[in-house]
Structures are given as structure tokens and as C-alpha cells.
Amino acid sequence: MYKESESPVMHTYGRFPITLVEGKGSYVWDEQGTKYLDFTSGIATCNLGHVPDVVEQAVQEQLSKLWHCSNLYHIPSQEKLAQALTDHSFGDQVFFCNSGAEANEAAIKIAKKYGHDVLKQDNPLIISFNNSFHGRTMATLSATGQKKIQEGFTPLTPGFAFLPFNDDDSLDELVKQKPVAVLLELVQGEGGVIPADPVWVSKLAATCQEHGILLMIDEIQTGMGRTGKLFAYQHYGIEPDVISVAKGLGSGFPIGAIIAKEHVAKVFSPGTHGSTFGGNPIVTTAGLATINHLTQTDILDHANKIADYLWNALENLVEHKKEVKSVRGEGLLIGLEVDGKAIDYVNKAREEHQLLIVVAGPQIVRLLPPLTANQEEVEQFIAIMDKIFS
Ligand SMILES: *Cc1c(COP(=O)(O)O)cnc(C)c1O
View 1: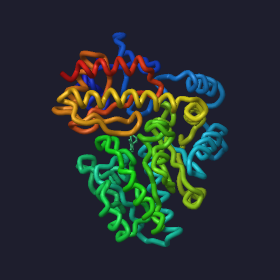
View 2: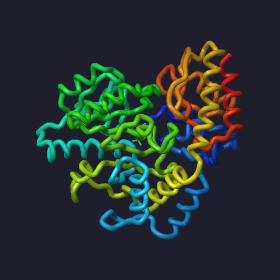
View 3: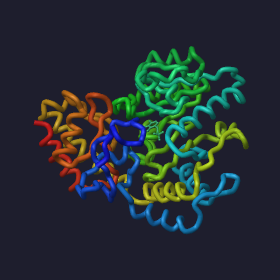
View 4: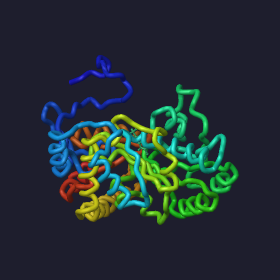
């Protein structure tokens, strides 16, 4: 057992006192061999469960061929993954990087470049929304609408402004401020699992369209089937110009990407952006196996059935347990609003019932089961929730 206070790893996380060493499907095991039901999926990353066979096999094969080569050469798995991502979305071209923050960095850079090159702006402005989360690098934390993320890291990167989320007044303000782009989460994940209002999103998309503002959706947590469609924007009947993807894209291998329409993508000419590891053979092989599984099997239908069952059970909890106040989210990205501290329930679930869940704010318990969870596992989960809440 590692002790946080003695660990040579920097103390940037409030780590739970368990050490996980193995995983398969919806379960993980700690170093003592204790088995946990994992309804965190590595925070929306292991959407196909832990060590899914299809991804494991593909990566094993690639491991004996080529691990890395520079982006100065064509990489077959990268070409194929870009093709699959564009075939199954609004987009025309893809840029690959290594994480969510880096994907949003790419989105921010491409928007600024578009502002300079196409709109001839000197100081392109990007609007994001209050309570959003876009990452921990300097530019992405500057784009994040939460003071607690920015505290201690001034001076921030300039060129960002914030407007209220789900608020009609933001639309008028948007037109006044003439930004090059908006950056939006369709379900604010870290901010407390708050879905965007569909009517507001339609109006926002129409405003962007009318005024030539790029619509950039942060799909890092909502993408790769998490909300019941491959990408969350597909629920809303809108066409973004750019989306950022990461977490679930590689089933646990570190990969991020932006997908863009051609008119935006073309401002990234040779030499304007890059990444040594971005889209390397191993991670794009993992990504390709992941998206093929999501688009070529009935896994999304399965996830939607499981989500229906789970939502019903959770609504039942809201009705019958006084500590559970509401349930919100989309598909298998779910927030439970509780009375008292969410972290206390999370700790109780782990310590007394070997169930892993996380928080999304002081009073929100966040549930992120794998899309592959079966009926029995969801029933097991519900039985535990039934015990946790009196
Ligand atoms: C997790 C997340 C990020 C940051 O991704 P990292 O891979 O941790 O850099 C950005 N935006 C959203 C919506 C996220 O959920």
C-alpha cells in the first residue's frame, strides 16, 4: 500500500487509498486481489470496459510491427482512424495529439489561425461558458469557466471570454463580442454533469451560423458513445465546425484528436502545428479497433438499453430515497444530486461495497459505467446504491 504523504509522485490528486493492478470488462482488482465493480471507466475512458479483447488483439499485433515513427511519414492506422472518424461525423479532416487538453489546444490554435488568416482579425476571441472544463494546460485552463481551476496560475492566456451556459442572453452577447469561435460542452462533465438545453443549443448553433462564428464542441468526455450516440452533438441536430475528442478514443491508450470541416482544417498548413507522438501507430491502432467496435457492432444499442434500465432504477431512487435529490445527464454520463457530501457516498461505496464511482462537484455523484456493462452488473450496482442510501 502506498502512502500519499511519502510518495515521490507529486501530490496533484486526492488519491483514494487503493492500488489497482488488473482489469477486465466492468471489474478491476487491487494488489490484495479485492475485486471492484468499476462504474468510473477511468473517467469515461474505458468505454468498452477494461482490456477489451478487440483492442487488445489489435494492439498486440501492432506491438510486433512498429511502435513509433515520425509524422514526417504516413502512418496507415492513423489514416484509417481519420477515415473512420470523418465517415462517422460531420468532419472532413483530423489532427491527432495525445490528450484531451492537447485536443482543445489544437482547437484553440486552429480557431485563432482561422481568425487571422480567413477573418483578418488581429486579436481573435474565443468564447466559452461559465462552469465549463476544457483542460489543465495554460491555454485550456484559461478557456475553462471555473475560477478554482485558474487560481494560482495567472497570468492567464489572453483571448478568452465567458458567457452564462443555457442562457438566452448569451446569444445577444455573443453577437456583440464578435468572437472567432465558441467552445462548448454539451454535457458539462467536471462542472457537475449539466446537460445543455437542446433549444438553447439550436439557437446558439443558428447564431454561430448566421454570424460566421465557428462552433467548436468539446466532446472529450461526451464522445465515443458515452451519451448513447457516437458523438453527443448528434443528439442535437447541429453541425459543428470542430470537435475535440480524447478520453474514450483509445480505450485507455493516450490519444486525442480534433475533427474539423475542410474550410477550417485547411488553415493548418505544414509547419503550423504538430506533435511527436500524436497519432502514433500503437494509439491509432487502439483507436481504430475502438471506433470499429462502436460503429460495426450493436454495442451502442446495448448501451442505450442498459442506460434506459439504469435511468429507470435511478429515478426510482430519487423517488424513494430522501438523500437522492435528482438524476441528470445523457446516456451513460450520469450525475446524481445528493443531500450531504457526494464524496462520503463515494467512499462508502468503495469501502463497504467494492464499487468505484466518482464525484462531479461537492453534491454530485458521477456514474460512468462502461458501455459494455451487462444487466447483472447494473443490478449489482443498484443493489449497492439501495444500501448506501437509507
Ligand atoms: C477530461 C476532459 C478534458 C481534459 O482532458 P485531459 O486528457 O485530461 O487533458 C477536457 N475537456 C473535457 C470536457 C474533459 O472531460
